[in-house]
Structure formats: C-alpha cells, structure tokens
Amino acid sequence: MVGMPPGMGCTRSHQEVVCSETALDILPIYPNIRMDGFIVGAEVVFRAMADTTRRRILQLVAGQELSVSELVACLGQPQSTVSRHLKVLRSAGLIHDRREGTAVLYAAPDANGAANGDAQPLQAQVFEWLAHEELPRALRQRLSRVLVERQNQSHAFFSSVSHRWDQMRIDAFGESFHLEGLSALLPREWVVAEIGVGTGMMLPVLASAFRKVIAVDPVPEMLEAARARCEVRKIKNVLFRQGDLSRVPISNERVDLACAVLVLHHVPSPAEALAEMGRIVKPGGQLLIVEQKAHRLAAFHERMQDRWWGFEPGKLARDVVSAGFESARYRDLASDPPRGRTVEAPELFIMTAQRKTRSMNTKTKRGTGR
Image (cartoon, rainbow, N blue to C red; front, side, top):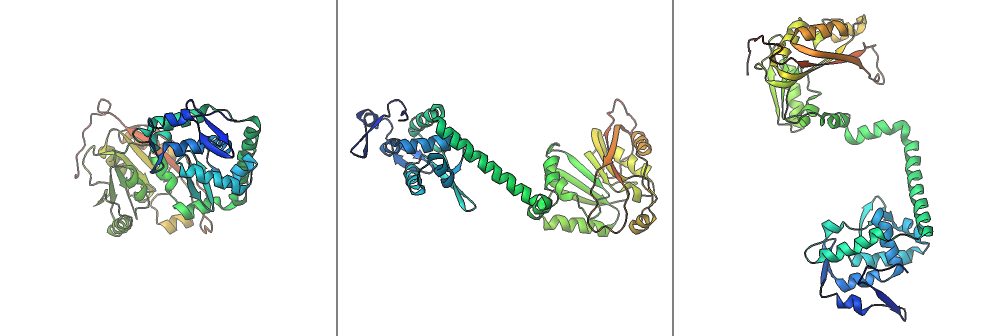
C-alpha cells in the first residue's frame, strides 16, 4: 500500500474507508481547502486519498496529463472503475480536467495557484508527497509504454500530412506569422521607416513589432492601398507620408531602422535614395535592403517596369558605405518560386548595414521634414 503523507494515515475496514484518528485530529488545522475554483472540506480530501488506486492516479497525473483510456492502460482496471475514481478525485479538488478534441485530459492542479489562505499548507503537503513517492516498477513501465504510443501516434499524424503541412498552417495562421515571431527579437521601442512602402505588404509585421512605423511612397494610390490595408487590420501606429525617395520626408536621424524592400531598382538614382536613408537613420541604427541580383531577364524587366536590371551585391555594398553606413553584409535570399509562376524572375539578396556613429561620421546633412 502506498504510504500516506505524515499525519494523514487511513485504514480500511469492512470495505469502507475510514480516516484514522490521527488524520481526524488534524482536521481543525486544515478545515477547508480551496482547489480548482471551489472549497472542499479537508475530510473529503483525506477520504479521497485513502484509496490505493486513487493515490496511483494522482501519482500518474502529477507528472503529465493523461486521458481516461491512458489511465486504464496504466492501471489495468476497467474504464468504469477508473472513471469512478476520477470523479471522487475531481470532487475533492485533487485533479482538474480539460477537453482536447474528443478526449478529456486529467492533471494535478497547480499547488501554488489553486490554493488559498489556510488551505495552502495541506495542499502543499499532498503534492510534496506525490513528488517524492516512487511509482512501482510495473506501473512505471506501463506509463512509459503509454507515452511512447502517444508519441508514435503524433509521429504518424505528421507523417500523413507532411505533404500539405505548410498549407495547413497558412490556412490557419496566414503567411507571415513566422516573420512576426522573428521580429520579436528586435527592440520594440524602435521607430522604423519603410521606404517605398508600395501597398504595405510588410506593414502588419512591422507595426506589430515596433512602436512606430513611417511609411513613405511617392505614389498616392500606393499609399492609399497601404492605408486601407492598415485600416482593415485596425493598425494604429503607422504614419503615411508621400514623398520622393531622393528627398525623404523624414527629419535627420529620426529612425532606428530603414527598410527598402525591392525598391532601389525602381528609383532614378539609387545613390541618392541610399544617402537619404543614411540621413534619416540614427547613429548606430540599422539598414535593411532586399534587392534583385543583376540579371538580363527582359520579360520580367518589362513586366515590372524596372529602371535598373538589378545590382551586383558587392557594388551596392560599397554604395551603402558611401552613404554613411558601415559593416555592410549581404547574402543570397532563399525563396521558393510560387506555384504557377509564368515569368522567370531574378534571384534576390539581402543586405544589412549599421549607421556610422558621430565620431566616425561628422558630416551634417540637411533635413527635409519631420
């Protein structure tokens, strides 16, 4: 018989569970226990703990959630018997349950979160005992088999859906949730400028990650589309500014990060646009560029009405340094061609750089706005 916590012994007589005098003597110390949202008498807890099977159940669910069928497999008892014991433990507040699909999972309540007032010492004593009481070897082995089978079922599911898993996640969460997760690595308090924002495809990600976003584009219709995107998503921390990219309507050293995603190949003078980004980024701030590699894809060039046929990354890195940045780094941007693509597209690369500090760059440039 599994040992009871000190001072909580019980005896079994004539098929009835009767708490011993020792247990009853301490009831005035712990008259009530609050667990799982309701108050139960301490005597109810002791009576629930008096049965060996119920104590085994508590030991099993103390380490992980288990369903009724899994508890049946561990205990080797009929489901009706296990369900009856679970009802007693649930009524005593010693376990809680939650529904997961068609199954109900049982677990031990949080000893710290579920207790209140004078009930906490009794609850802590119960679960401290559970944590140190060793399961019999046979029960440990059956529990291990149950958990292995659960993992095998999970592996079988993922094996069956591996060919459509990406689409299942996109259908459920959209296409940019992983980008939002990565953006959380950057400081929330940053002010970010997206230069050449277009229709604002990146704005939901940027707006969720940073305190303020300034969206700049020279074309009113593009800005209106970007503004409409934010209104639909109830985004409130984006400022919209119309302006030429050779004279960006943002004051000097205003932003922590400037982004230009597939923009430079559209502007008349990429060098002027880079110089403007150098002007608006704070010393020590960051630059992010996504661009096309140099190419000769005439159909693509004509379709997108590009001014430039992409860039050689090394040459663009030198232009970035000339614009007041340092530590310019670039790498190829891996991208999967979309299904049904009818026009061959150039390869992309990503470039990052840091704005030089004042001690390294003392040249002052004019401001063009606030």
